Length: 123
Image (cartoon, rainbow, N blue to C red; front, side):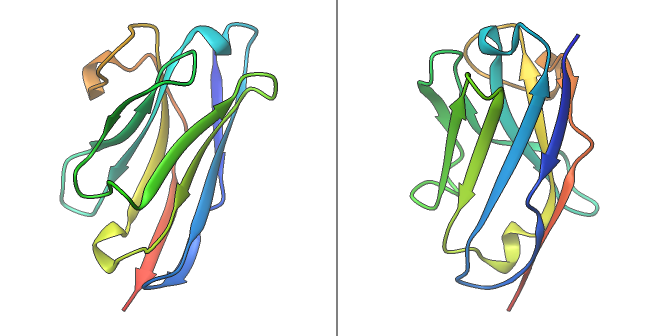
């Protein structure tokens, strides 16, 4: 069993930065593939970046490439999403996700979800 708790969301102006954190409980955190999804009102939940258990970046969505960076600290059971050069279209609820299956991450492959944190980017 893994529980995920996100923090760090908020309101920021376009061009600004935010860092999201996802704290995980459970002794097996380091074995999970971790990712961040986001969901804007009326839209599907989409994967943003994915990081393997060893810290390798396995996927970054084209819309955030060069602006968002995912990282993890297995000693602290925490995964991070550094978001720079934010745009109004980045506005969404951001969800931390954990999956036992390595590699690509889709909604159906997620084993555990966080509760979500709102990110709002004003123009």
